[in-house]
Length: 316
Length: 280
Image 1 (cartoon, rainbow over the protein chains, first blue to last red):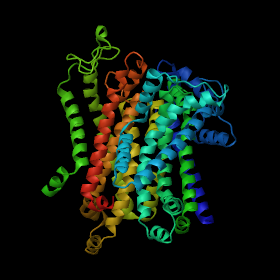
Image 2 (image 1 turned 180 degrees about the vertical axis):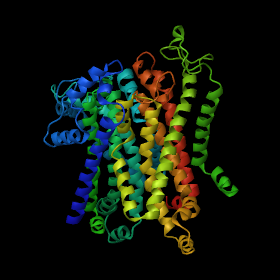
Image 3 (image 1 turned 120 degrees about the vertical axis):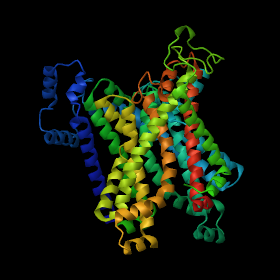
Image 4 (image 1 turned 135 degrees about the horizontal axis):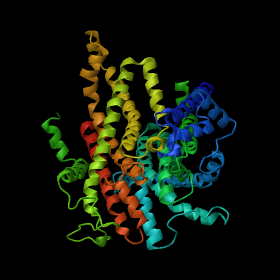
């Protein structure tokens, strides 16, 4: 396990380093000077040169990169041009919306997917199974932002139970905030759950055919005990893999759904930054999101090894 | 070319047929719109704004009086172009890298695989955000972003399948006969992994249509006056209270296109790999 962990940690740190270099190269070194982008097409060469000096763009790229990363490691971020405050403060503020949204969506996804997947596997080749498969096929085809729009149409326009978007903040108690995040989380979760329900179904079916499951049943264990004690634990490996891979989709989906519901989260922040040509914000937010995807995949890898020790033994 | 027996089996496969019909409709709509649409899709007719569906406007008009049916028809071109080019980029670069990794093994394989692990950290939307921040939004931005995202998908699949082919006896025979890695890849590996790649390409096409719709919904993709399904949904959302029906049509068209491609991909998988079909 020790060698497995150290190998995984090395890969994790190396991936983060490469990700930061890619973000830096794309946003700061590719043709299309950052100062020109920020000032727009009407800027004079003198204005561009002045902004380059203010932003430190006239220094060598390697030094700029090291300053940026060194600052991030010490918890320092650059000041946003359009907001006038450090990017870390902006991100911390927006995370109060994005983080609960992602967690709610993840919980909903897991509950819906496991329930539907196990139900379908238990009713293999019967109407219930077919129903879940049809539902999942539909879920795969529907874009999350369209589902979000349909939910707004139904619950905000037609039934008028909730507002069509916006976020009241956490100051007036938790319920109004949770209520504002419920539809966005549902829109995100439904699409994710469609994929995960299929994976859960086939994983449960596959494990159910294993000899040790037959042995457990032959020993006299109840169906329920076998399902929880043997089948689900082993079926979790492919389910976890797909959940890890889906996390990138969840982040992408959250950016889109935040824009549909006008939620002041990270997704809105990065779009406003593009509109304001605030490249400092774009750079830090993109790195944060990419790093989150890498971190989640790392955690999933380690979780695997905990669930199935054979994996770490093979890899060490 | 698949033999006639393949087509006879295909014609009896329900999801392949259903998917095929939907995909054919999508293709036909795009082709038809090259020559004809009920109205020019960008033609503004303010007196006729928010018209209900009628003989003159099959699906009605939007807030500027533009004909919805015409925009949907011409929008199909956009989805197909992005899908074909983005999947093409992934297929060509990804398969080349995957086959190279399988043929060379060692550090080349390790490098290709680590690079594709790494590319997963940048979903299409993140790449599109970075590209838009520097170069501005547009069709090019969506194609490049979705294409880059497709490369590791194909590289992984090509490598895994090609490794399987490389361990077969006939490849060993070809190597003993003195054929090089390049020749073996062209003669044996590619023909044997083609079916897996075709199935994956169909599924990635569906993913590309969804991604393109999302990017144009967010304003990062196709720009006016070229109609796109994603942007139609964005515009419809602004008029949700006056004309809720406008939010329905583009979504239905996107969902049916993606459903068609997914069903066709599932059907192709069953038809091209009967072992998998039995296992399900």
